[in-house]
Structure formats: C-alpha cells, structure tokens
Image 1: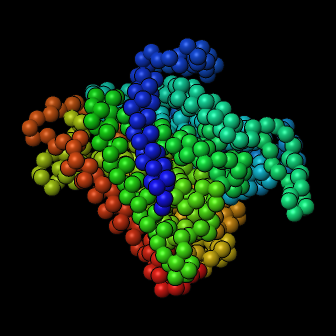
Image 2: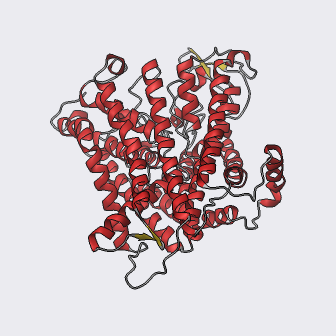
Image 3: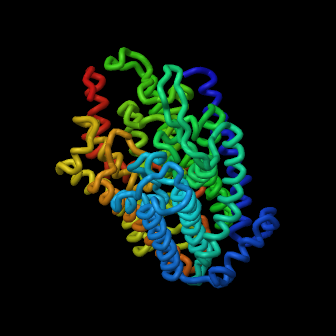
Length: 563
C-alpha cells in the first residue's frame, strides 16, 4: 500500500463520519413530519401522490395493516417488472431490438429488483431495453430502497412509542423516503456522475474502430440516472455487464470514490436518525461505532490478504480480476463496502479475490449485512442482534432484559430468531442442494473449494439481498434463476415480517424508567457484547460451510496449489 492509499481510506471514513449527523438530522425531520427545506421543492408532489392513490397520510395503522400494504405494493412491482420483460420486444425505447426475456430470467430479475437485491444473471447491455431499465429496474431501485427505510421507521416507532398499536402509515413513509431522501440525492449525484463521464443518453449502440483496426460495439443508454440510485439505494445492479468496472459506469478515480461513499451514506446516516427518534443520539452513535469496527476489521483482513506474498502468484500482489485504473486498495475497499452494505455493485471480480478477502466479502453478507447494510434493512437487522444481545446479557446477570425501557420477552426473541434463521436456511440448504446436483454443478467455472465458494457466495448474496457475485458461476439457468429467486424472497420478507411483528408488539408496551440497575446499551461494554454476539452467531452458523470453501482454499493456496 502507498501513502496515498492510506490517506484515501482515512478520508473515506472521515467524510462518512462527518456526513452522518448532517443527513441523519435531515431524515429525522422528514420522518417526524417536521419542516425541512425540501418541502418547498417536492411538497406539492407529495400531496399529489396521496391524492392519486387516495391515501390519508395522517391515518396510522397497526403492524398487520402496515405489513399487508407493504406486501401488496411489492407484489404489484414484481408483476409489472416481470411482464415488461416478457414483452420487451413489443415495447418502445429498444434501439438495439433486443428480444423478449425468458420467463425464468424475468422471474429472477423481477424478484431481484423488487427485493432490493439486484442480482443479475444476464448482461444488461445485451438483454434489457432502455424502457425496461428505466421503467422497471430504476423505479424499483427507488421503491425497494424506500421500502427498507419504511420498515426501519416503523420499527423505530414501535421501540419509541408506548401503549399503542399504531406504527405509522406505509404509504406516507414510502412516499417521503422516495421524494425527500432518495430522489433529490439521486438527481444531484446523477449530475455529478454525468460530469465525470458516465453516459446518459438514448442513442443507439455505436460501432467504432479499435486501435488494432477491429470493430467494437459500444453500448449507450441512460446509465447515470440508474447508477446514482443503485449506489445511494444500496441496490447495486449494473446498467452494463461489467457493472462498476465498466468505464461508462465508473470512469474516473473520483467517480469511484464518490460511488463508494454513496453506498454507505444513507445507511450510516440512518443510525443518527435512529438515535434522534428514540430520544438518544448516543444510542445511534453506539450502533454506528459497532458497525464501523466490524467494517474496519473486515477491510484490514482483506487488505492484508491481497497484499500478502503467495507462491502461486510469484509472491506478487494480486492484480488478477482487479480494475487497473483503480488498483488493489480501491478494489478491496469496494468489495468490503459493497458486501457490508447490501449493494451488489463491483469494480473488480470477487471470483479473483484471495481466499481470505473472498471470505470477508462472504461473511459480511452472511452476518445479515448489518455492517451498515442496505438502506433501512441493515439497521433493522442490527436491532435484531441488539435484542439478542440484551436478552443474553439479561440471562448472564439475572435481570429482566430491557431495551430503551421496553422489556424484551419471549415473542421478541422468537421473532428475532426467525429473522436470523430465514436467510441462514436459504444459504446452507440451497448451497448443499446445488453442490450435489448436476443442475447446480454444471454452471461452475472452477473445481474444488473455489467452486464451492462460488455456489455458497451466490446463495449468500441472494438470501442477504446483496446481489454481487463471484462472477465464476453461470447463474442464468432454470435451476439457479428459480432457486436464487426463491432465496431472495425468503431473505427479504422472512426478515421484514418478523421485524414488523416485533415493532407492533413493542409499541404496546409501557416504558420502564431507567435506574441504577438498568443495563446500559450506549457504552463500550455493550458495543463489545454486541459485536461478540454477531460474530458468535455467524461463526456457529456458517463456519463449517466456510471451512469447505475459502478457509481450506487459503490453506491449500499457501502450499502452492490453485484451483
């Protein structure tokens, strides 16, 4: 590593810390209905939206009605994206005359973008028209991210309110998330990206002559508008097949830095919003600190692994699969950030990461992507682990477990366990299934433990709603399109429903005043306990599977054997 690499990493975290309270305080005003400066720009559109969908924004609902509205909205989004892919050839804005998408690929893609996963088993520039990219995928990038934020806001209300069954209004939370947070940030970011050289047009694909005299087709399209929301909404789906390694998506080192920062910007700021809404910014900073420690730990391991000498590669730094414009440090920082944040974008091929760096990327997802995680989703996933930590701490000291004055009882723990087990079930069961069937093994690019890692990573990415891939697995098959699609659904709604159930149950409870005997959840002791529970749960659940993949590959590679 060079001095400039170190300075960039320090600058990255400094900006993240500095911007967290700024954006977090703004989002606090948005979701509490306070006056803020964007009301003058989009207030009229908010009112018009409520009028069109015939919703009273002040009418609040219980957790069951909130969940029903959320599921119905996402179902409509799935059906729409599914159908426009099936009839793509008959729809406008298709200058490349791309054919209709197969039903199983359309199913996988519709589930993927509806669930904020953005897993792609296809090449964007050769599969989807501009119409599908804009009206289907880009729209889902906004509303799937807004759905995650809405669930988090409902959970915060459940924790902070007392003796009520009201969690707010899903349509209000969805609209405000989109209009006041995601849309203005995306417009600003898209303009910046366009200035850096990201393409934004409706031109037909262009044929050019290379230096060698050969012909090459260059894809065009409205990319900048999708790239902006794909990063800010922790979506990650690439407009082009090479994703953020493509020079039309990520042209310069500056665009690379900004896109990495955009991935964590809203998830980090939501921790401050959380603290403000529950009445204690210390609670928000406690969560932010735990997330940052885990992120830095993973980044450090990955950097060590990528810069370490290895006999297989002639004791040289690992440049295979890296984008030469950005180098090793930027590739490793991106892989760590994107897998910690439920963002499927890549600027280097994860299939070429060293085994330990690949392990970190995989483990970030397996832990539930609670290291900042997806917008909203990462923080409500972290609250699940906070509930477990408080419960375990209460058992250890013989006190009734409480969090922010609310008793943690059997129902909350049961729902938390379900939320943790649902994606774990997909990862382990589906990976085992794919590893012993011809349909699963026929798509592998590598044999041995690395081939197993490709399968394990794919189902981890699906269940964690991440969307990135090792890129060594051909997932555009009937088997993988269906199983990964089912995995995305379980990973998304198998967590959302228990979280909203917890919110609904906690909202009904009274608040117990804190006393000298209250277990504090805003100090370094709790941070240590929380991180320990996260790592122990993750280790117990996934260590056997990881031992068959990246861990054994690391040991074998150090002996000079490669797959």
